[in-house]
Length: 173
Image (cartoon, rainbow, N blue to C red; front, side, top):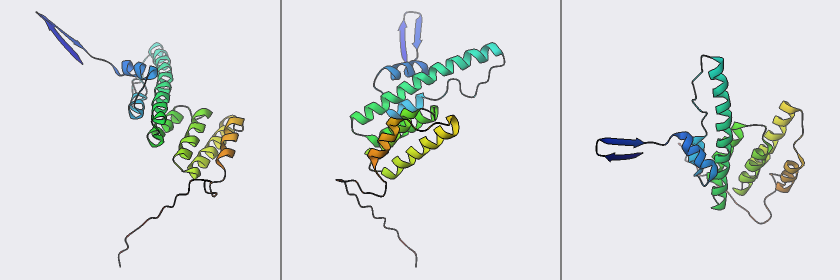
């Protein structure tokens, strides 16, 4: 918000979410901000004419592409800062925009693995495999299969990273 006054003239300048989305798609962005900006354009509005509906559909498609780029930038930034947990919600949102996007499935597999949650990485692989089979009658591409194999079995502990989790719970007698 920018407010300027000059004599009898007052100028108020604001930036729209679209302006912020364009900026986020081009450069660094916080993953949470990218999620916020990825909401559909004019969500909840249904035009009453075919022309307006066609226009809105085209604009929403363009905004979705920008949202995907903004989410990718947010994820990249979080990974550069070694914050896979902060990247995870943005990667989940990215996948929700296009559930058939194999790169998003692989990214989620990698993020779960980076957080030490290999079981979730394998579950994401199964989700990818099942979605591709159900929707396209295809198997996951070689890159996804190779990533899955590199993760190993979820029951096998990582070779050099042993973590023990203990839950302590109070019980009423």
